[in-house]
Length: 133
Image: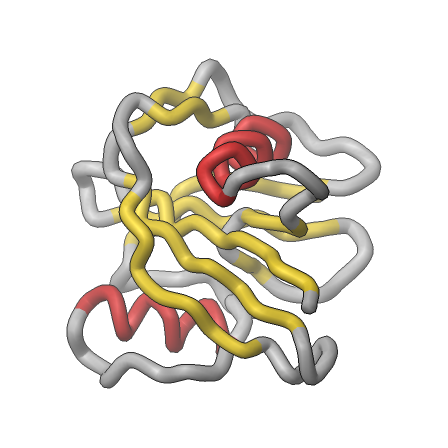
């Protein structure tokens, strides 16, 4: 089984932090794989730092676990809500991240992936929770 984490980082102005990678289309919630001997919290913390220049200022809340069978029949994603954080400055583009910034939940950018939109609708309570990413 492979395990990944994603984080829905929500600010006080009803914004969500999204990233656009250089190697895959669309805007996504930040996240990545969980390394050997790494806790889920450590993985979230690492991915937020690497993809968003964000640091946790409180405990992330586990929102749900999803089977991501688009990747493999054994791939699972843990989705966390992050409401308490600091951003140490804007995330500048590099070889992995083309863009990263906050968007209003009511005005997501074109190209936001369907899975990202579904997870945000679940968090907002406008869609039922699913088992699959």
